[in-house]
Image (tube, rainbow, N blue to C red):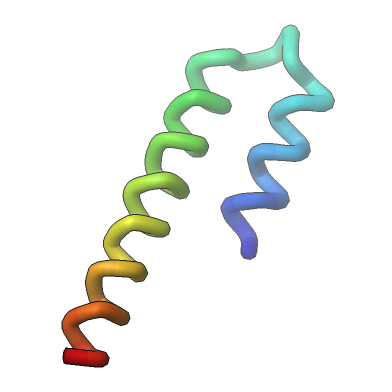
Length: 44
């Protein structure tokens, strides 16, 4: 959930740091996939 907050903050201060926003979004995306994979492995 904290990753989502960071993305929203980044969208507000768009002129400040586009690269940072992209990095945070990328890591949040990777974490999301990793969590899903862990859930799938746990279920099976």
